[in-house]
Image: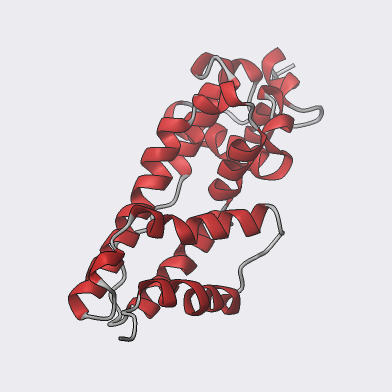
Length: 208
């Protein structure tokens, strides 16, 4: 009797919470990330998001006319920051700490949601998110790797010719590939092994 039709449609037996403005919008965005990280892009529905946010479907559609619009805003609002470039006195330690930050971001709820979008969307749909991925993920990570390598060049523990765009792709590419294809959870020991066996030989001055 006191529950609206849209509220009742959110989830059988659920209680629709009366929230408005930014509070309701944040609840919807959080619910979208939760859906993406648990059921993936293919399983996400506007109805499911409304149920997770404990609101009516109409409240979702009033703000976001499509699934793509909702997911884009949810990812933009939720993607974690990688912070500033670490500087621990050696390129080995700096890369190790930066890779650990990347792991934390990858396995956060927004990170899992982003990976669902990257790996499940068809080409046409994925184009909708290219700008967001570039500005929110690729550009910040490249900036930090570039700064870490530049610090190493200044200290003398990195070759001056190592400032190469392909070098900056190695850690993100390995972590994404082994996470998605091989199911690696990237323990600290795995990250240290990658740095010691791949990155240090790739970057450090060659003998002779």
